Every structure is written in C-alpha cells, then in structure tokens.
Length: 148
Picture (cartoon, one colour):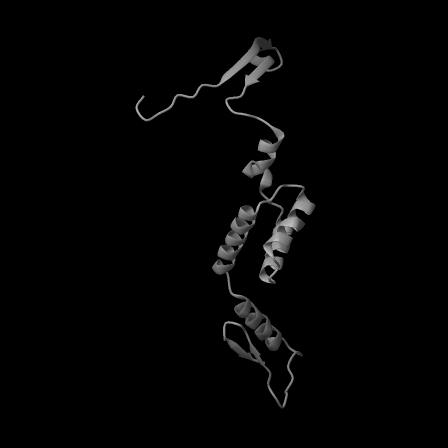
C-alpha cells in the first residue's frame, strides 16, 4: 500500500436476526454495541470542531451581515454570536462568514441599484409624483449619483 496509511476502526456489535411476521421478512436488531475511537475525545475537542462552531441561523446571519456592513468590529460581532448561539465562534470563522456574505452580495444588485429601483418604482406609482423647484442629489461612497 504505497502512499496510504491503513486506518482500522474497531466496533463490537451484538446483533440479532429475527423474523418479523408483520413485514414477512427478516430484520436485524442491534442488541449491544461498543465503539472504540481512533482519536482522542474530549469536551474541548468537541466544542472546537467546525460543525459545532458554525452559525447557520438565517436570522442571525442577516444581523451579522448588517453589523458587518455598518462597520462593527469583528470581536464585538463574535461576542454577539457566542452569546446568542452558545457556540465558540472564532475570528477565522467570523472572517469566513463575512467573506461568504460579501460573495453572495456581489451576485445580486448593489445597494445603489436597489435604492434606484425603489425610487423609480415609487416615482412611477400613481399619486407619488410631485414637482419640486430644486433637486436633491444622493451621492454614494462609490461616487455614483442619483438625482431625485
């Protein structure tokens, strides 16, 4: 076995094969089992596992997205997530979460495009029109301007 390391796991299982009259078939029932782990186990290792640190609640992710976009410090967001979820979220987890959110945001329309669409929809609705003597210009950080 060149280049491969053989890993064996040991499980002691006591199973019983029995006939099930209702199903008209044989069934296998595990009567007793004992599993031997091939790695260390502890509470700290369990809590630090990525699946136990991951935040998947869509409501919390929306809040984190808003906090991050508003400029909140990552350490404060981590404290918020730890308090709300009880999970040990790390700084690296936080950075990965923000990177996924930014990538998702890039797929859709920008904030400016969404705002422009809302303003245009409001303008086109009957009864929402008015004439002003002066116009307002909304300037975004990106340099894009909308005259309202």
